[in-house]
Image 1 (cartoon, rainbow, N blue to C red):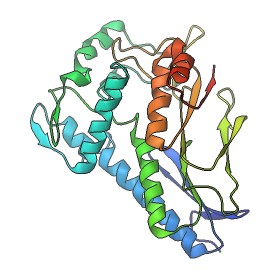
Image 2 (image 1 turned 90 degrees about the horizontal axis):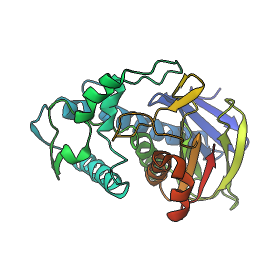
Image 3 (image 1 turned 60 degrees about the horizontal axis):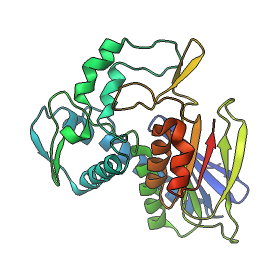
Image 4 (image 1 turned 90 degrees about the vertical axis):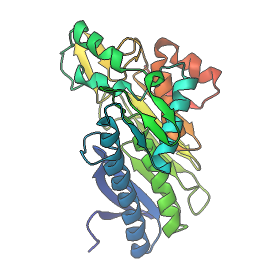
Length: 295
């Protein structure tokens, strides 16, 4: 009998668990159950470490402490500083659209599939608390104005995937694929040199295949409204908000999947594509990004 969480499928062992509100797994190509277990434990441990450290829902997390700092200057560790530097870079190259302070808008919006659109006045009350340019960040010191919050939801899960890949490489050289809720990365090709087959799910029906991608290096990340949305008077509102208006981006693709060397980069570009709305495809073509869009 296999240990809990571990199963066998063809040439792979699969270690499955749940973290960051998503189904997670690592596929490891090996015949050694001990190696598979070690890889699974490493991936699960890293996913939970990142979640506990950067979840805004955990009172003791680094992110919660920063959000409760109320205008006080806080010194952060190197890992957090690297993430904040990356967030600042995303804000800069997106022209302010990619903004990790916009999570405070969740106090008005709840993308639960209902038809509840918040009052414009409620959104307007929150807008003064949005804007990375209002944050004072000079590594390693952060000063977050009172009432403002940071939300790493746009990069946290993807960063966890990259961290998990590094953790796998510490315990084995066997080929592996780490997948956290559809954001994934591989260590390289399979043992025989072939590529991993990765499915892109349909936005219309859960479990239905929209495309199959072959991957022998790097990562994929997907942004879209398949699971988090509102529907009002026949109009679908996706969960990615425009930090300038506090409202959902107008006319974005239903789904954007991006290939990049790291999952963090792939997630950044897939989110930026959504933030470009009607011009998503133009943005991806201009930046020469390999992507798959579904409208």
